[in-house]
Length: 359
Image 1 (cartoon, rainbow, N blue to C red):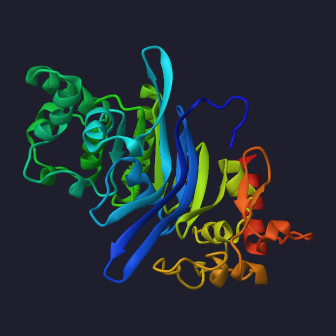
Image 2 (image 1 turned 90 degrees about the vertical axis):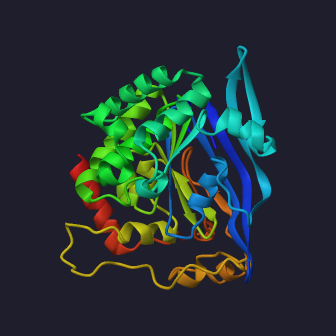
Image 3 (image 1 turned 45 degrees about the vertical axis):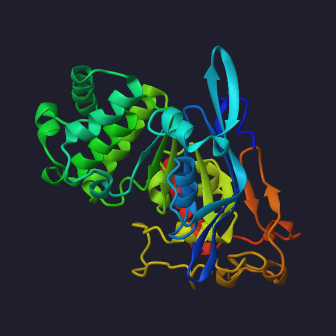
């Protein structure tokens, strides 16, 4: 879907991506036909609760798949410049060797949720930071070490030389995540995938890491895919938001579309679940029920059993795509109704307050 006249060229297009896992209980359909486009220099946020398929989709792009995981269908089109020409290729058709040599770590890099598990506890920061630099940039050991010092300084580590000699357990959570970011950007990637990079950090560090990612994006003109379950996190960083549920995108739009004009009942639930300092209610809202088991293909709209606004057709057929504006789309039978279903009153008041504070 076009984002408008000022949109930069697309660098990544995911089309009808379907991914399954073979488990002892049967085939689990984790991703059920996902489509999205990432543009140059853009931050695309993918939001949804645990099990929605957002991280599985991102890891497929980064080539990090488990042995029991299979891409059933779809394509991941990567567009890049080669010898003065623009080339688009489906990276799923690359050989494993070509992906490792040309893409991962070099063109597509990833920042993980837990920096302690992303780093090898038995190796120094220098070893882990310079390994990719030497491999992809063909630098000498001395040149790679100098590049490592510069990167650590860039990400805000005050004593880079000392940090290079240390092991991950000797660093705080925030410093470890800075090191992971330094490793991710070390080989000048075009696409940076951030898989809930602030979840394992305390709130005092989260904002600093988000600012760091934004500054690195601006400096290197990165295209960022930001995975999170927290709508509050993406409010200040996303250019475009995809809301996922049960392996599918249910709504997509700009932050203004999603935060001020949400149309899918699942998006309503996610927004109401964010704590609000302006409400007198001391209870946190929770979406009723639980996500469906994807061992069986859901019949109809997957969110229907948890949706208080569900129509009879929601339990029978998948929801159609409805285009609400140039930038805003939703999969919903409610939009087919002659009289549109209004959002919950509590959410309407919250949005009105948000608009009032934004003025």
